[in-house]
Length: 271
Ligand SMILES: Nc1ncnc2c1ncn2[C@@H]1O[C@H](COP(=O)(O)OP(=O)(O)OP(=O)(O)O)[C@@H](O)[C@H]1O
Image (cartoon, rainbow, N blue to C red):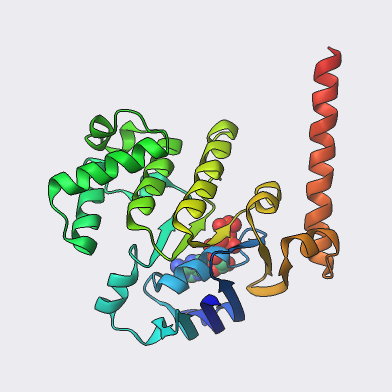
């Protein structure tokens, strides 16, 4: 069963008439993880924002976005707001941007949960505390009273994952959730995202530059270039028998990087 179906998505800049996404069609199956890979500027983030109808003013879109049989592209703004967070959650690259810098992070969590579920303060605190402990955030109540700038990037990502655990949306869109993190935090956040999928059974759209992580987490892959999907298929097929020259280039670059990394490790051991 498809959780999300995107049909003929076209996105353009109204002012310059520059077409950003030409004609994208793809499906996200229930419980599966679909990764979008491709070079910088190929349209991965714009695709994600289009699904949520969160593109900047002046960016127009057409085509159908069907979520569990419902045409999101036909909903009013008010109805669309209700779907965000509750049905389709987003975990962004930069945790700092996801939270209001002028409030402690607990305010964002409480407002989001009250809006969607109408829970009391104590219910929210109880559920957030449990979820934060699950993503290994210590002293949850203290942490909720901190401003975003007082927390590290990895902590903010884990806090977003904890909020997603409580909201339990059908789909999580994770747009380069590990790019801004150091290697250890990247590993932890990927583990937590996998845990989130396991415990909520959500489907995931996962944008990443890191093909190693994609190979670990995704069931299927879309390869984007210049606003077009140039290849798609199961992760196994795309990595082992890529058809498009650009995909082959991406995969070989990863192999080269991997080989260099191993060589560096060996040199390090010899010293
Ligand atoms: N608000 C905007 N106005 C005009 N053009 C935009 C806007 N946002 C994005 N674009 C253009 O859309 C194209 C795709 O951008 P997008 O951010 O989706 O790329 P990306 O594949 O996510 O890149 P990256 O990996 O660097 O995040 C780029 O050429 C960008 O210049």
